[in-house]
Every structure is written in structure tokens, then in C-alpha cells.
Length: 338
Image (cartoon, rainbow, N blue to C red; front, side, top):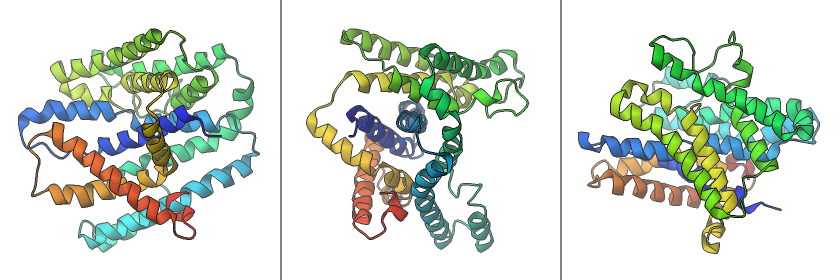
């Protein structure tokens, strides 16, 4: 039985992913702040997907290889299909040479053919660890999960040391020789997903939920405001997927959907998006950049506050239409995962 707030979260994450890649290059230097705003709003998209997936998959009762067969068969075939499609598209458009296209095809097992597919490779790594930690997750107490999340949070704070000292003390991408390395990275979002599913942040008094949501958003936004106003070199680090800002935004979004229901018509629409979310994710970059952007190249809208949401909405509609049509074909699971 689908859990409605989980479907809402999945659909919302899907929309945020498209919004992340919708903003076209600014035509006016004064529009820079709006680009930052859209980037900030959409920043927790992939992290939200990890958190939602983890809340559903952990703990698994499946035997290790049974779990791998079930999950990877749904994931790898569509990724491989669209990766090959994108390489041929890039070659056909003259963006890559035949040699570069060949290199990309050969390296698909270890290197994404397009940057946005990094998430798929990350989730594959997390899938590998799920059967290993599931027995502990099944019996873990609240304070034990919180303890590990707390250690993970330390790794999110460490990049601030680099900023304060001006030295590269901690590598935000991880370090095999660092003491907290194995509790860093995206496993933290996995733990947050498990925790929020087992111990949901549901409040009887909804003003408390509002207070938690606003507190997370405010505290998460402060570092970005500082970076944009005083230290733009730190903006990338402070808005990284593995940042305090992203983690707090994920908690805020989770808290919102656990405490508040949406109008029925929106929930029905979100259920459709959630069903096809993986297929939408895989093709959205093609639709946004090679279809919508190309059309708008000679028809730019006057302001990013109008243009970016319009690109997102149009791209979402086209993606949903294409994926729905593909779902009617035989063996559609090999193209879009459903």
C-alpha cells in the first residue's frame, strides 16, 4: 500500500531535480541573485531522493543477492539504455568526437555519460551496503541511529574549518584516511531516511511543525546568505550536496509532508509523477537542455522569475508525456523502470 507522504516527497524531489537544471544562463548580471535563489530552492533534490528511497528500502528482509537482483535489475537497464542514447545524441549533435563517444561508452560502468547521472552511481553504492546494515537497522534504537547521524553531521561541519583557517584540512569529497570517512557521504541521508520513517516528526499541534520547518530553513539559509554577500568563493562548498544547508532542507521538507496533506487533485497528480519519477529523472536533462532550452535560445523570456519556472513546468509535462507513452510499450521496465 503506497504511503501518500512518501509519494508526495518523491514527486516533489522529481520536480526539484528538473528545477535544478532549468535555469538558463543569465542575460543580465543583476539576475545573478535569482539564479542563486533557484539553485538554493532546488538544492536538496537528489538528497531527498536518497532519503526517501532509504526510508522505503531499509531494513530489507531479502537475502543479499536477492536484494541486489531485484534493485539493480530495475536500475541498471534503464540507465544503460539512456546513457547509450545520450552518447549517440551528443555525437549526432557534434558535441563529442567519435573517439570521445567511444570512451564514454566504454567507461559507462564507472563514469556517468552526463553529469546529472552521478546520483544513479551514488545510489548503486548505497544499494550495495543496504543488506549489510539492515540487520542492525531492524533492531536499532532511536538514540543509536541519532548517534550515527550526529557523527555524520560532524563531517558536514568540517568544511567550515577550511573556510575559517584558509587551509585545506578536510576534503568535502571524502578521504579514505580520515577517521570519519566511513560515516560520511550519502550514507547520512540514508540514516536520516530510516530515522524519519521509524520516528516521524509528526506533531499534533501543527504550529510546532511549522516552527521546526522554519527553523531548519532559516538555519540552513544563513550560510548561503553569508557566502553570497561576503565570500562567493565559499558558495559552492556551502551549498554542496553534503552540506549543513542540504541536510536541514531535507529534514524541513520531510517534516512538511509528514505533517500536512495536500489537496486531493495535487496528490493524484503527485502519485502519477511518483510512479514515473525514475524515468522522468533519466530523460529530464535531454528535454530541458536539448528541447526546451534550444527552443528558448531565440525566444528568451524577460526575467528568470518567469523563465525558470516555465522551463521547469514545460519540461515536467513533456517528460511525463514521453515516459507515459514509453510505459505502454512492451518491456518498458528496461527503458523507464516501470
